[in-house]
Image (cartoon, rainbow, N blue to C red; front, side, top):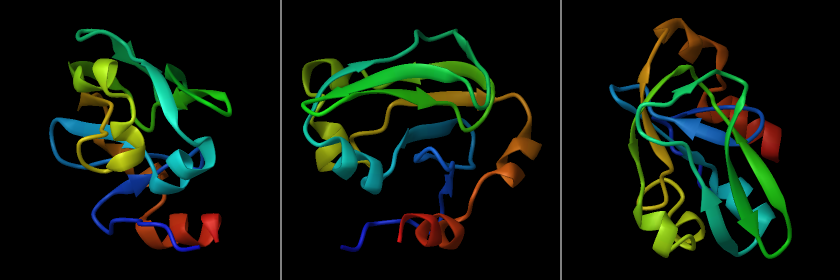
Length: 126
């Protein structure tokens, strides 16, 4: 099975993605949403919260599992996708679009260099 891995995103081995513009948008990959199955609940931080690269910042609950979501970068949460509170299935339907989780003002742009590019991430999930 082939998964969508957009070229313009950076990925974490734990299957979170981030854009590299400001503010950065963070979500979970197509592979991750497929592994989880139907997402039924999302727990996210509040605007103004600080997140730390590599640390859990939220939870995605599916019919199969409850999984922590790990921050690919550090920074301040500047937006939360509130549509997910009523429609968590957006994470399954459009993981790189309407199913985004949070937007962050990055604290350290160098952290992007630690993440996988699309080719490296594709190799990991093959």
